Length: 376
Ligand code: NZQ
Ligand code: ZN
Image 1 (cartoon, rainbow, N blue to C red):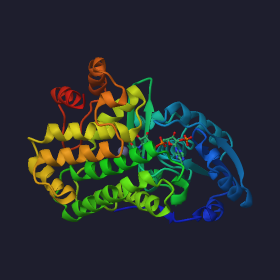
Image 2: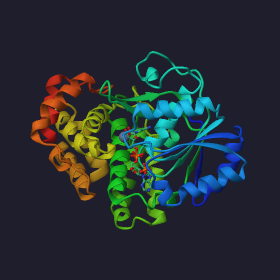
Image 3: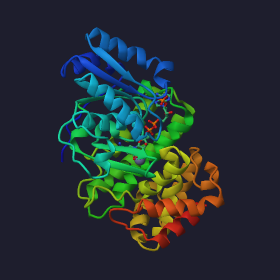
């Protein structure tokens, strides 16, 4: 078990940012997204910290949701040119993941995609500090980064211990301005992370219990949060649940492959093709995948249902999950995300191109067609 992230959690933790940044030097590359941090005041708070600590700051804004490798490479060039000492990423998963790849690409003289294509392995990284503004991915406390390459039509994840942030700042009040929609997608995402761990190979009862507990937090506190978006206590509970769901400490021990990740692979195809938000791609894909697996692993699905939803059969378990996603306003069918029947062939083609499948539950091309039909 390895996790070196120093996590600062609570109201006003941003006040420690200046000190944390000073550990690494005085030249900062600040990375952020499309402007939400300007509207909610987080940008000003971060800049105040960096100025007070005497930092020289280069800025790269405009990272998109479902981030693309071109932005990573452009920001890398800026950081490399100015020989920055540290990167500060302020945003959700898309911003922090991009910053992770920037951090390993600056010391290397190629493109960020070389790591994804397996042409090069990271050997060092510029230290990264994350300021999280959206609870969902767990990226603030894990070594993963997901980016897309539209030229090759791939959205891939990379794992490297060099990409753990050195510090992560989590102030639940920073997530007050996240829309109802994206709050729900974040809840779906954190639940999907628990389920990817649960459906891996390996008899790990304690890890299973962590999964059930984190899912229970999402089920109990997610719906009230959607009615009270500025409730600090509810934001805090969901934020810590999202971090716990994918930080390699709670849910993965005793799993043979650190998660199955087959459903994420399906979701990535949908995001790649239709720019679907990550959590929405999972709320569509997970019920369909479970329906495919119902006859293959009925006992495992029923065990989940018993502990999380108080039901007994695989069918009831899947219905319970699907109903929960629907209740929080996430799509569970392609049509609900505006993706028509005419797209089936296209989805199949890109699933084949990306060799979609799980680490444990491999999927055949026949399975792809069944999953697409089950999503429709
Ligand atoms: O770009 P801005 O203007 O900041 O707006 C963002 C974006 O439009 C907005 N937002 C973020 N914080 C906000 C806010 N709006 C108002 N107030 C705030 N405080 O929310 C939108 C979505 O942001 P994004 O970063 O894309 O969302 P999320 O955190 O869900 O990240 C999704 C990305 O992470 C990847 C996904 O594939 C996707 O690309 N994942 C990363 C993982 C990891 N590194 O471990 C694991 C996950 O499974 C996932 O694959
Ligand atoms: Zn995810």
